[in-house]
Length: 389
Image 1 (tube, rainbow, N blue to C red):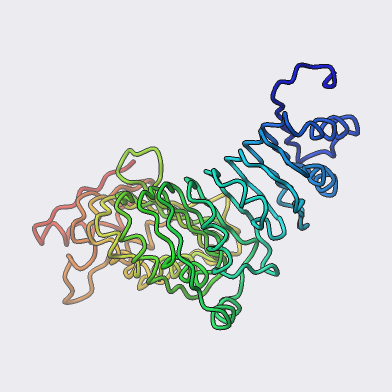
Image 2 (cartoon, rainbow, N blue to C red):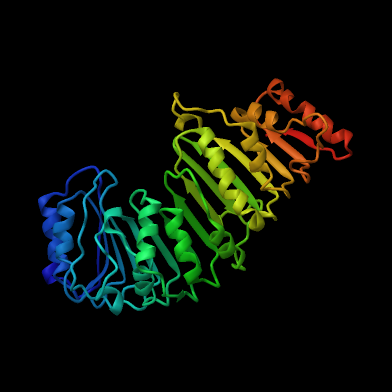
């Protein structure tokens, strides 16, 4: 039927992670890919090796191709290879997952009008030196969305060794970029950021893997220089093996401006990680007025350590000195209330000095743990309302 159809644009869209592609479906996709001049959109999500067979057919010049998305399911850990001779001068959106060196020429040298580039789950064994990455990204001045994530942790010592062997010399300015995402070691991110200029950035997404130490001074400098990045409401979500910080520009905003994931195994590790990160980021979070502590019960393994040191909680709260509303999940009531207790001779205004409302979920008996903190604030002439949500 396709052979006798009018020369209309072709859209190839096959998303199926549960079953292998049928022979007739595979034959149809292969046949459609032979019509290079008509293919406008390709989206393929299927198991390996059938996916690699179809990728091999995306070869040669595709003058109408605007959108290319290719990814295997997460359970597959294979390396996909994109044909080296693919040309797509009209390409606007490119999303590739688990590919080997997916950003080399001639694809990017011809697709200079690209507005979306997402390179997901780059294998650590295929380390891309920041200088090489920047040089290739410099070919894409029209980018509005950029994402680069590694598949799993890359040891910081490996990154440092590479940087010592070949220093970074490239600089890249993205005059139209609104969204930037990075997943990998903080050492790699710290090496990239001083070489990037994104004057219109509105959304920043960071993913760190299993790290014990976080040193991100260049991240705070980078964020401080972004005029359009608004940070008003922070939600810290604790779940199984993951600390997730979601930041909105203000209360009620639907779209987040900053997100950070840190892969950690226990609550105490998560709180310690959050303390390290936000201690450094304190200068850019000085305007935050709303802080939420959330706990995903169903996602917490029963054998995890769900108790954090009160000292770590106090250090975390010191990073949010302008918070006026603190919302606490019932599972954190005891830990948070203990951290807010005033020691003998201590000032009740030492933590969260601007706090006006403390919201909690749970019964009134559980909230009694905050009575000493509330009374101490009231006696100091700074009343705090205790509200159940």
